[in-house]
Length: 293
Image 1 (cartoon, helix red, strand yellow):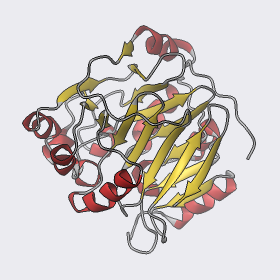
Image 2 (cartoon, rainbow, N blue to C red; image 1 turned 120 degrees about the vertical axis):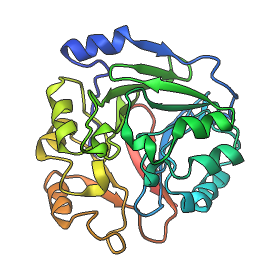
Image 3 (tube, rainbow, N blue to C red; image 1 turned 90 degrees about the horizontal axis):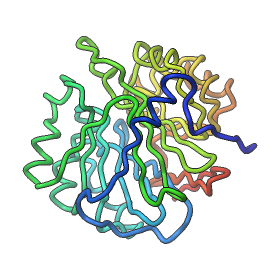
């Protein structure tokens, strides 16, 4: 795998907006246990068709990006225990569908959580899982995110930047297009997390002029052909792809045609399947590599 140089600033107006809206995260609840390593790790937890990613930030703590389904709690807990996670600095919820937010209630009951981050747009998907209500019942603060926001996790000089690249607007007809799109940047590396974003929202992202290049791409909508266009792959140029589905068990997800598209783009793909419990995508700030366990 060749190293890739990443630009942190977006091009044009979106880049300016990212800088203007820079938000420093301070005083947001509990102080979680801090990873000892100076490497950042994005852990892809295998829960079948559902999203559950763990982000470890040096000198700061641990964050979840989505919580899988309600029944996935034990699988998530196993990975958190294996890593020694006793507290979560925050949980990002891409949208309110049950395979992304269904595990939130159990997690905030079992772990101290500093903050829950969710879209500030009035996304109808939160009628499925009322994220705000779940967080407030557990006395966890809620922070709304909007396109153009930038969060700094950890120390500014060695921390992680989370860029909110979407959604630009609410899609009343297709709730998947209301997913938060997050670009997680650590020095010269990045991870692009697409939630369940489909082609309509993806097209707006491509037209925004934002920097999209990333070593790791978490594909939108579980690897279906209604997301992850060839143009997106050309802009992102990922080394690794994450498909949050099991090819044998989730009919309609992880489309074989998408596998061919990723192969043609030179992307090494990981699915939520096999004997491993999770995959770490580890960044030292210059390069990214994968470790299964």
